[in-house]
Image 1: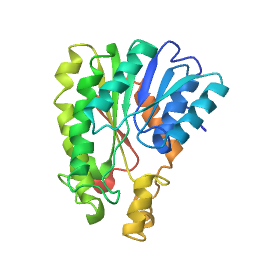
Image 2: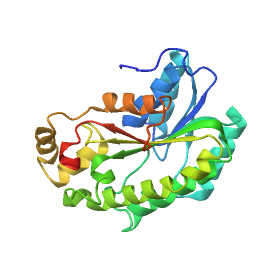
Image 3: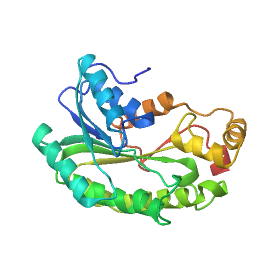
Image 4: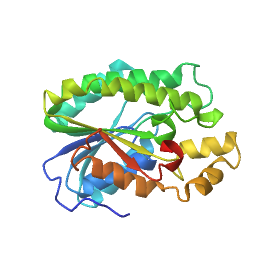
Length: 253
């Protein structure tokens, strides 16, 4: 795993990465831990994977705990932050990685509840534990970030619309964050090879990911994109609060 963060660069920092039992979240939380941060591995229902990741981080000399929480359940989120306050005393980094909406068997409004409503509720609750000078990172896709101007594949449209609605609602909170010197960064990337979303899209629309890869020339893999997310936790905040990852030619003209 390639880690862009220097060893010891986050010593003394405390970080929560939502949806970090696997995929981009798992690689991101591992990178933060390798840089010295005490980390929270958050999961919804993959407790075994989360505990295995905690064991791996601890075996490498890091400090980590696993906390289960359903982000669409305010009581569950409150319980997570109570535990963080007890264990770590607060947070310096919040990576808002968890998202969804393509899973089968979910309610029709699940994407909007998770990708917009739950994200706002999460950040509002996090303000109780985020210290002054903290950093918040929201992870999204180009397909969602540019959905207002560039159509996406039909199978992903509802997720993209809900992710953009969540991004807009979080951006509305930037003045509130700035009052406490809390930085906010959106990390927007193209489709990422090896993610659950890519797998579900390929299942719904065979050839969709390979076609996107051909159009873009390159798609980042999970580890490469996680490195960008981890870097966004410490790099200066861009002027437009957005860190773009990968080719933009199909989205910006």
